[in-house]
Length: 268
Length: 370
Image 1 (tube, each protein chain N blue to C red):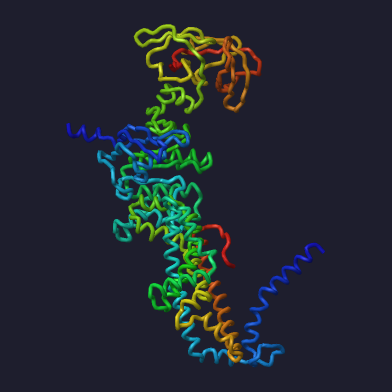
Image 2 (cartoon, rainbow over the protein chains, first blue to last red):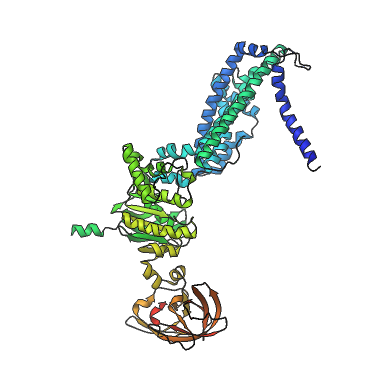
């Protein structure tokens, strides 16, 4: 049987990848406090418990606020950097872009510790804003990478044509460039949002007294009683991610179809 | 007096235009004038500066020194969106996220027209380029030829003083290209706007233009109407770029009042009038002539008309094209074969390699490069 082992390998790989995630809803709907087989019965009480947890609501709100703000900031910065690096030539462009991309490979814990040292040294009070600062720092290299490829595929003469037809630099950007790089902007927002939402180390160091969702989850894992509710939370988050991804993919495909481009890559 | 002055103002005037990219000298002192209502071509090999020169008119390239005047006005510091020019880009630059109609009407956005008037003008522009009824279509669904038409309509709808065309036909296949050449000429006559075309295709330039500037290495080598360009190239380089030209080494025997007596192996002595003598040739003195100005005589045929001289030679190569046959013939006493093109009229035999032939020619069709 040709390729038989390859199929086995592929199946084993998928199982390894998704089995832990399937465990989440399994125990979220299981009517027992202990995370162990055999399952004891169907229940939605962990979801109810999750909903009633006030700290969780605060952590979720904090995380969403941080994720939205940092993804928007990182994407705006990414647009500026991508535009500059693809459109203009300036001294030390290569070196500068390299420095901007460096946080991509820097250990997050080092970034977190140095930021903490600097912020405390400056006398800055730790808050959600310091977390946002850290998240923008780690998200921006990703947004730049995504947006640079979007800006690179843009035909320069489209801009020139709009300029030639009487538009200013600003209106050309708004009417031509932005709509054409929009799929890239949406991807960038989405990626930055996801990175920020589940980022733990920086949030742990810089959050001060206000927990984010990953920090809250980590803190709850010490209490066995709280674990099933965390499973329920995880189930909700996985569902939300799938829905979010599907929406983003829908917009991306629609954008490509609208412009008659060829579909290369994407998520789904 | 004032009237004549206004009429004499060129639409475009280049005054010693220099352009440097760092140390690279892209435009080397361009001085030329383009008349209003003219179909003008910038012709040259890639890298000769023709596109750069076109872009200095549009305002996309700043010049290092000199001046570009449009309709008597110095364009220094005038941005592309404030110049009375519009451009058809090589890639057409059709906005892919807009419809055909939105593309064509894009430049009118700022004019603040009422919707019905805008629609009417867009429809009229589309009709002018033969795309009536295409307004609602998505721009990305168009073919190459249709994109080109949309780009033309989009540029012409603003009624610019000058339309700039950057190699607009290079992306089309041969048949469509020839069709668009004819349509562009018709369109230019219809709207009466000055057209400036950049092309590397000498045939295209000859077919379409009132006048052509041939450019090499950032300079204009010759600026003339197509016939002059073809008949009397200013240099061997221009002659070699436009069509095919044969060259035979020659020596000048004497000069009197501009008339030159010359001698060339294979041709003998001949006398040339002053307007048959052209510019400098680095390779020394040579006689140039086009393949179609010679006639290969068949057995017993007598040279007619203006071909009053005869030479003999041997056929070295035959290329059969159906309506034409190209021969490479080495004239007796010469080292290099010359190209002769003959129409395959009824009754004319196609010669074979090695055949002896008589060639009739006229000194009047020759140009002396010195």
